[in-house]
Image (cartoon, rainbow, N blue to C red):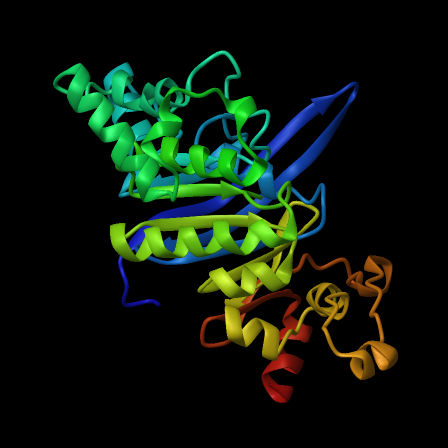
Length: 310
């Protein structure tokens, strides 16, 4: 991946929230890159900071510290209204809940065309409607759906509308924040296959946030595993599943069920106990590259052991 062009660079990103007299460190020092044309999966249990990471990258939250560099520009630097508008066109988001993310008072055509209107991408009402119809067909819906309202659609159809809305401004990068978690299992694969198809056709780059590791493996080129606001392991998808090194990653993978009765009868669930993995001398674990492209949060001593055993 190192010879590919970096689209997004995350450097020591932090997002802390004041809660009462304390501070919640939702994101606490993330560093990773996303390359043009790839899907980077970000996984971890609920509350680990995945969605906060996505929302901070796209500036829904202002970063507490660190940098987000998109196409060579600092996302969180001072920007004029014109610069922000340009940035918002290049980066879009698909939200987790297809029910809450669509305005129930707007027709599908107005929902999809909102970005087109804001950025002045249609020269006439006819061009605007033609673009809406094209987008509906792109995501597997019919142009007859344009004048309906969100409540008239199923969850899977609503998520397709959300995807069409994100595509309307021809973005380069899409953050998909658990886009399938609210959908029936039978619909999840359809939405993921649609996203993969659109990526091939339009050269899109994705940050795919999820807690379902089996689906993340299917769509992602590389995967970062998050735990308590930090990335503890990062590797190419196949490598991570074949050779998980961090005990937390091993725990997550051991929880994935397989349609094999014999395997399920003998499957041993690994429980991650963070207390057992505290550094004895208080040394902070940092991401280190154990083998090419495979990073793990570890101490210097642990890194040397990994180098011997890997």
